Length: 405
Image (cartoon, rainbow, N blue to C red; front, side, top):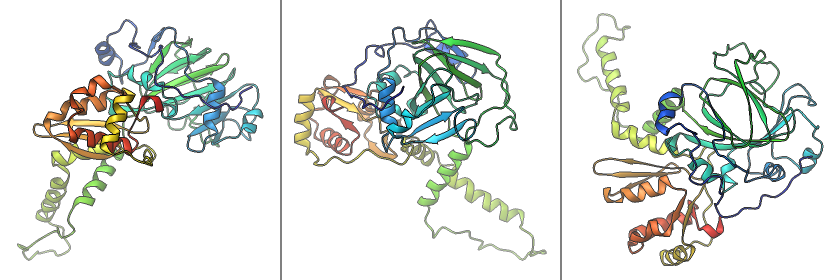
């Protein structure tokens, strides 16, 4: 029976993740050209010898923490079929679960399990801004989240036990959903293909492919997800951002107004002018580029890493950096950069840093690696601006030292 157990953290190191290509015999470009965002792919022994960095009891312990987003799905034995419960949970709740037909899901597990950083790095052939999180699920025999459809790309890595996956790539009708449940479970699902996955196997699914996974025995699955924002999300965020920047003194002006035959008519000239105002507001590339960098690195749930207390001054930071042998990037933060001719824009958690073009190496280093070894930074350790920037980022929780991860 699943029991609450505290996850024991350790430095980021897990032999199953290092220098592993999860695509089997396919090259990264072949996968992107033939499968990414197009069709499913089963990869046998994508990570051979894979072992989970967290056991079921430790996952239950995470699901009891206040800040962790966790869910329980009970196919049976709940108030109704396919009952959804939200965490945090208590140890008694796990003790009272049935023997079969339920699933525990923990979102953003990479924020709490340091070893999962290397798992995400195995998928570095996909731009980091598309990366969402690593979700970990546990299920006893017959446990499932039901047949459903997601609107994101996902790699389903089997970590413990066996799971039968069934898929159907045909479009799902809007009325093919069960009523009286908070879950979007399909009421009619017919599998076109199915496989049994064992530890180390990966099933890749693009958006819109209906899938149904059932645990054949005690089972853990790691879901490495990649989000694609909707057009509505992009437009809403960009408009909000532009509105906040516009001077309220900018107004519609009609100093050349002429007498109209029909005062109730909105004339073609008026509409032309309105279109010009709106097009000018949304068509400036620099505004779009920098807004997107801020938008795509914003924390998913509005939570930022905590400010360190006490904080370090630059000299103290440099000393501790050299003693620790490097830095580890916080999995609570999101990083990206945009390179332009005269600027390098670094984005961290929705904040923009305007760097000199000569700092492109630093931007690449920060955004491409979750672990920065001291030799990567050696040439910059005598640059006071560099030390001050990294000290500030450390004090704001964006980095940690390896022995404290």
